[in-house]
Image 1: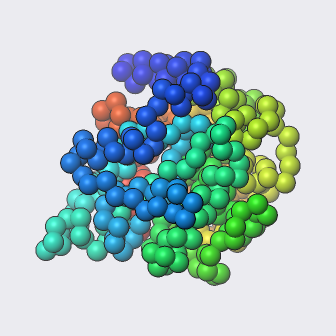
Image 2: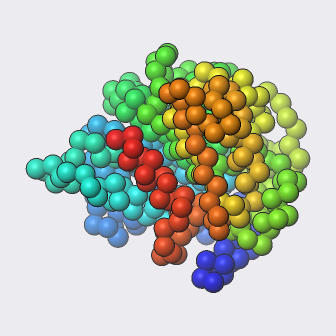
Length: 339
């Protein structure tokens, strides 16, 4: 009941506000991070990229492995406090059953730190600005921080998962308006996590009717967000940018050479985006030459559609103090398996 009431409130609140009103009411990603650090008595730490974009650390910046996280919010909302809380909680869970270093649990050599990109928001910044910033952060980690791809996990939730896929697309299909990627050929990321990915901007699929009063997001909210992000009203015309902005509409062969073959996709059976999530999984599996179960040799593309879960349930349920569901447990277990 608590979950249903909260989702109903969020759904109606989000749909009634314009992007500008949302941003006026929200604290901003950097401010939310500062509040999170204060709440947990942590020292804020960030990397500042060449254009002033910030990347925010949870855990030490010299960790041997790092999860680069791209937050959701329809490219309109900043990262909310519960995003940081969820990522921190997941990292705390990873500490369990790991032998503590003599310098403390945060110094364990296999425990990853998490780095959250504080990207610019739409409509003030439209595509491909966020992709430029994500690519800049990746290049920074590869060339300045000197991380190898095999020590990096790319993760994203909702629009952040959309951005994660745009980043992988840019590596193998360079976008003309985005500086080139420094990603080394033939190498692979340690993994890719897509949490409730915003896979396309088609709001007519059956799940939008079936799950209209179960989910925490709505068509009016999504239409406002995609319009702010692309600068065109729904329905958006498909063009040369569509594979970068609506990954479920990219042909399967588009994904053939992406530098990730360890992929986890999660979604909720009760979310309006679930049809697009399933389409995305199918195209990724086909493009990478995996079978319908997402497995082919060393390639593992796993799809988890959790019963009773809505959009981004792992994060919202963390905010509500609700018991961890199937998606959150699978994400934590999947990351642990890569350490």
